[in-house]
Image 1: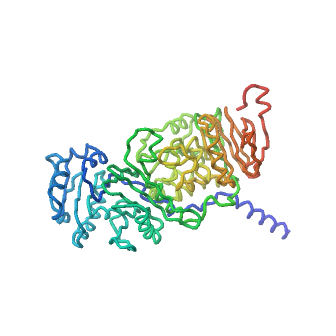
Image 2: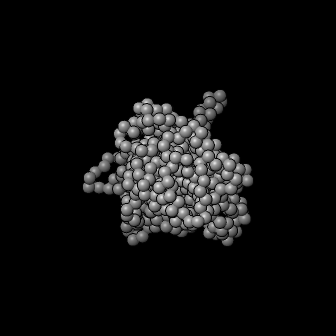
Image 3: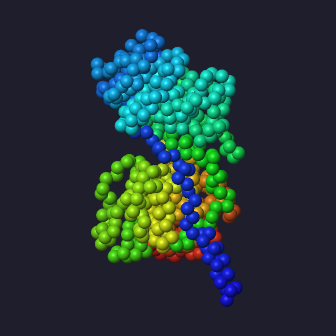
Length: 546
């Protein structure tokens, strides 16, 4: 009897390895994902008209405050003043601490080296600057004070400078103005070496850089170079952007940079390697996952979800929309559909505030006893931004521990994997997005999931991913198609096929590097083997079973 008890205990321990492990951390993601207003910097700028191009002309028709130091040349200050209407107020920098009312745009212009008094005056206004930006306003800093908007800046032009704290209005950035090539890049890296979770930013002469929301772009004669510190596995990351000269979508990555993505990658470089060389096996020990490839739900799948969640009378359903917007309104088609089915407990949650997702009990309440969650479509990085590592994330995993069901379509499919595929904030052409690869909510370990698969010709994308990460099982799901996962069994339902990429199998040049299974087929995700293939039946019938 004693031997039987020990054996059962060991089996229980072995089984728990495959349960919903919550090892994602709140501190692995930035808290402040974007700024509400705009911040513009330039160390020197002969053509001040680029200010309107970057900030938008509407701001220049509203109240503005222009502050100059006593040494600013009259010609330069006159050129700046000429951009603004009669509503603009002009004053000296030393009056900054005396301001009681702030307009929607504040411009600070200094020349020459900053004095200690000027530096202290600007730094002392940190709270006021933060409120200006939080209210959707704009701050432009031109001249020698520009570097103060970053988290750290250089004290001098010495070969080995040390970092001075700034306002951190341009969050987690180390800013170097007058940037000119390899030597200055080394200077930036010397600061990043002690602060690897920061992003180095080198701004060339005669160039203005603006941060709007979370995106950066430039205007002027030069560009901006962004740098991340190397570690023992990743080299230095370097990228430059230039002024937009074309509206072609393919060129956006050359002119736009998502600061949150770069901050995420800076954090990621300080964490253990991901994905792990031997990830946990893709097993859903309790509950059910429904992973839909977008383009509509397979017939009968929603009814099955509700039944698994406890049936119409007992189900407690939560819809999680995918949106970058702070407010998504109160009406959602999914919630309305559930209520038409007769489900009394049907609601939604949405936030872009990670602190709220981690600590607001009223917000978290629907998740605490939810029996079913559905993640909507959109851009999957939004889910990672909002919930990764938060208490809400843990409560989502608890739904499965209780035997509930989690479903999602399109973005709501990809987010279910531990690895997050196709999560580039600017465009979504790349299946591997640095900084966001770790961002999946991890209901299913050891897999990378892509959607709209055949319809958008994404087969080669998944080939690239599994070639780089052969330890991952790649899963590409067609539209109106899904896999229903219980334990390690994935059953295919819907009109299309599901493509499984297993680099444990040989790849031949004249054959597909995946296994494509139609409806009714079953695949063991943990053992990576086909349990049932209905392809022959589909060929004989002329259509797939749903």
